[in-house]
Length: 389
Image (cartoon, rainbow, N blue to C red; front, side, top):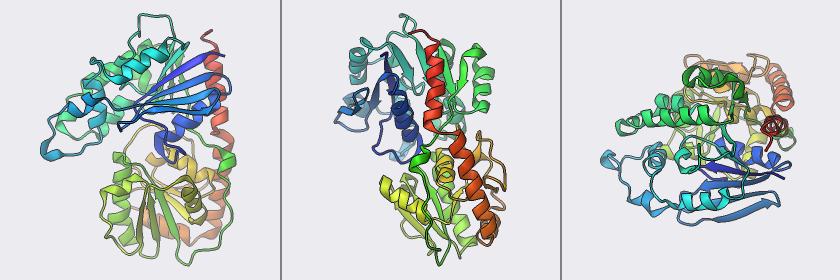
């Protein structure tokens, strides 16, 4: 069984409940049926260690190097910025950080190296010097995303370095997986690689764990949003709190995930902030929701929360941006809304039980038929097999 080493700047959070952690865990869990896989992840804390998920699937969490805490960047007034940690990986890539020690250890017995993003590219000490294949399993078109959402002036100075790293990874990797056809074309247009090696590996779900149990009707309709502490999610949560809640007083808005931490607990009477929730509580929220809302206006890749909502059979009201790359049809799989008419679309939806039932069924059927992690992993396995490890 071939051994795969996967490099990532964040860890699996068990059980994964949102964002990239869902892709990171479930995709490699499925691939571990065919390969021996080690995830080499960077923690945010001072404690690391090995977690074994199965005989062929494990994660080594690398403790944060002291150099990360010693490095200071030109950030004013102790400003907390999303991209600060990512920039530190770029800045410290030529230093003898702890992550490189573990990379050396696992590299020796690995047949294939997979990068989850460009941020740890320079930690791969033998890229271009050995014959081991490399794969870029992208979560997003990272340079395009950063150019879109990085606001801090200091952070934006690192955009050329990020561009250079992602271009190097896309052009030097033996395989590149994009999450959507649009991002595949962006990689080809921007970095000019051999287009034949740029493949699709969309985000997915486990249909069998997302079955929705019929619930009692709520006295007041509940609209659910879940998002991590990721700028586009925070922007969406802010829109719900400061716009939708006031325009839809008859709707109870439930916001879960770390996107809540940016807002005060003192809110409108019809907004509840739950913060980060465990997996079982998330499943309960899915059962209790009358609809899901996804007012996304920025970001990249495909939206995992959209997949989860639809796979669970929750009727979805979303911007076009929130369903990007999935081939969904308005009023068949979901209800399309924009910033100007989002509140009106929600009000209309909750008054139309027949429409909600229809898009709930059609959306669930479409997602579960086309976006299972097992199906996606099978496609990736077929592409890896062509590398003749």
